[in-house]
Length: 488
Image (cartoon, rainbow, N blue to C red; front, side, top):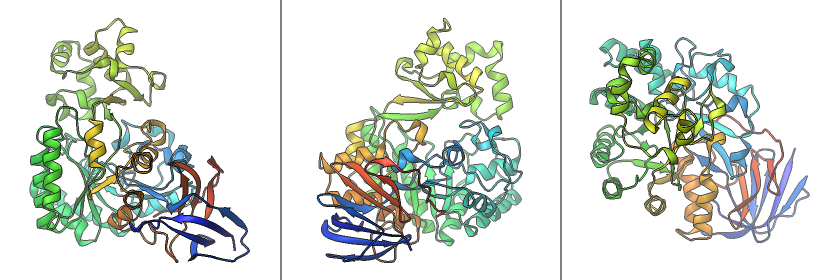
């Protein structure tokens, strides 16, 4: 039996209780004892004098799955070094399962799907595949509504489901929930389902609620119409009894008034509507390049869209339809089939080809075949930081390790411990027990006897030790190449 004894720490147990001095004994993957003085001859002893001990952090909106990083970078060490011991994928309506025909078409904009052999269809089969692979971090996933919707309809087409299709889709998602999905996610900003009926949305939310799982939503209208979008979700949560998590709930520059109105709506209705939201404490936002397409092009299937952007007769019309943007501040952060472009600004890309900014954007769409992502500083950091203190707020990376320039968890820890935007015990609760409770995770998110030993030791917002299921994944700030992650 492997044992680890942690001595003399200031214990933050995840419940919001102020820190108290304690020892903690870990046996195998379980927290065995918590006491003011434990005398035990353990295999390893860690002196925590002058340091905090907290539960491992939970990233409720991670994208390691859609980038296929859980296969190519299974250690997820960049997140472990931030104290993150669990990541949740399947967000934004996109998941690696269920797959009706074994196709990963829903992630083609993010990763080269030819690099992986898909040998699963159902959600249960997917989890069985992942369980056989070593992971450095605990991993759980929701079932993506958009993924299942696309698979059901075949080649993506912007239309409402027939009654029979709706019934089949519900059965697919129900099976996924029963096979281990933590909930259902939907992206209403996807042009192919942006006109989804309220009946279909309600039906999906009810399905999640009936199975005691979370329903997560990426909003269609995130800017001027944000208050109206939130008002609809408040009503949906109240009518269905579902627990809703809004992803990437971000305050865009110049729209602080609308954002604060939306936050107030959630707070004022918290007694009757179970709604939370996640964001990150950074200025940079990430968009897929297809976001910049004019609306009249977004409802076509991908094959037709690619034909249109390469159609010389449509060039002027497309360029004229592009929104205003600042090419100098737009950075290419992901381009699966053109990785040499990563790190260039759109202005650099355009100048290298003797093009103006809008011509450059169209050219980038062409050569990447719309498989690219751009980072742009359009988030009001002051408002985002203030919102982090709200009771309904969760912290998320909304990224994968390769594009996580923000380092959300490390930055949030600094805001709490050094700038004192909220008490450290409250900050830790937001990173641990609150997301665990919302997601319904078993015996995680607290330091409690009988719970899994996902633990973080830190001081001055610097992560020094990380245990994943009782194994030391980070030691004195260095990754130990320990792959002890489990499926949540």
